[in-house]
Length: 150
Image 1 (cartoon, rainbow, N blue to C red):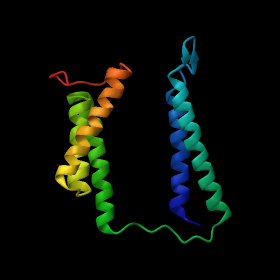
Image 2: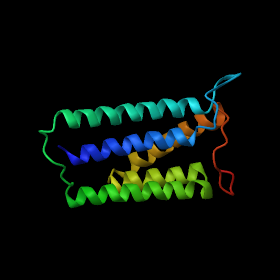
Image 3: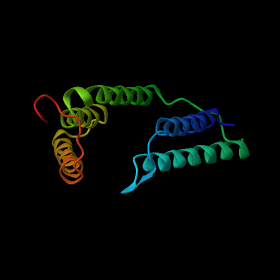
């Protein structure tokens, strides 16, 4: 039996419970349509389904080999990506969505994934423009901003 699959399935199930507990006080539906909890419950349900299916498959087919850790370079790359994601989450309320998003994508593309600089800069510009247009201009969602208003 693959202990890594069992651990992953249990993490998925705990994550689904955590999401459900986190939105239990929000409305699923209100007078205007879907409430703020509807999407979270849908995502939690899908996460729970994936976790349950992975756990069932692992129990039914125990002949798979045991979990092996990735090579050192791959493991370090994963740890760096996690650190950059945590940095993004920390910087988001401090410097705003646009600046933290640009920094996150820049570090991920250029330094961690080692992509070419010019295509990475184009990707960052297009992605941030589309994200800003959708969330701020179209949906009128107030995203975190910096002292500069960006």
